[in-house]
Length: 240
Length: 285
Image (cartoon, rainbow over all chains, first blue to last red; front, side):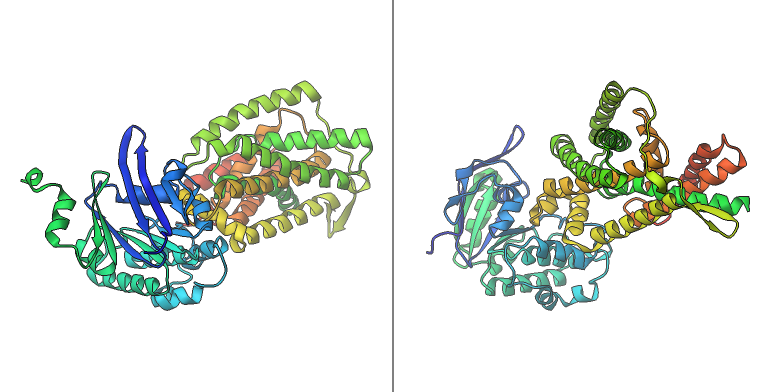
């Protein structure tokens, strides 16, 4: 396997006195699609937040291109090629679709690659809604803006936090089709997902988390459902 | 005739109020930061300008250039040292921090300049006027109004269409999401505060030429600026300009009804707007 684009080493993260991650080891290679599954509260979003610099972690715990970047500010991470589609979308309310996207263009790592036109090609409905304020869009359209905004940061690594949450199945399919074409363009993607089937089919490799630890990892196509069930919910005897 | 004159003088007075209000529109209207020192900083700039003019024999235009630059520097410092520590969705911390600073500033100015009212010698232009029909219109107030209009247009364009403006609106909407999109919110806020206080440099010069300044005047300018922003509608730059006009005209007309009624009339109109159209003239929703 190639040298990892991004890796976490014994990552420990806390919210105040509450410890959310207990020594997580994680890595993703350039161009790879990795899914991160687990129940609510397993620490998936916390892992993304720690990578993105939204939680305070020690520098050596997160490495980008082998360099320690743990605890770097989110805007520094964007500048080094990591972008995030945050949980709950977090669009800029009161601003139009175009302005939301332009903010990302303004602060992109490089020029070229993704453009406004390419994002509109990926999500044609956004072109129609270009001058509409984002709070007036449907949930699926808002998710498209959030993905487009992250892409326009020109990431080498795209972190997607629960992008199917609360969307209709048809919209989820559309969103995941776009993920497949983004992956084809060579961008590495981390998919945080609650839907195990969706995560398995969309990714090359997956990690399962439980209570702040990685409980299972391997090739998505090779992992048995039973093994995932165990890793997802804990040991069978604990469930029974 | 008296009422037409009141209207014209009110609009001209509104030009001065608009210069108080623009920085407030940016900080309170867009960024949702309450800066209670807004008026005190204008007075401080005015007093510094008057002292510089007296000491070095500077004309009003040189003073203007110095005060705008000094205002930008003060704004940068204010944001870096105090406001960046209290940035967030809650306006209360910034209110409390700047309230304390406001009292300290007023007392420091009182210590340095005493309670005397002072003004800046504007030269011939301060008294010049021209006749329009039966009315006499001062040259200086017209310059003030034109300056205010240009500043408003420039600021509005910057907020709407520039990289800086988009970053500022994004950071105001969701500061964490802005950081996740590559914006360094502290830099954006520092630039915005620098602009807001730099505009007070214009207001300080014109206020000092047109009328007087003394260390305790700040709170009045602060109230006018707040009222103009709220009358016009939060987040709208041209709204603040319109709000300043409404305030100026109300005061000017009120003054013609009864000389003691002018300032009160402005406050009453503000309260009426709050009751009838709380989102302001150009406010959305």
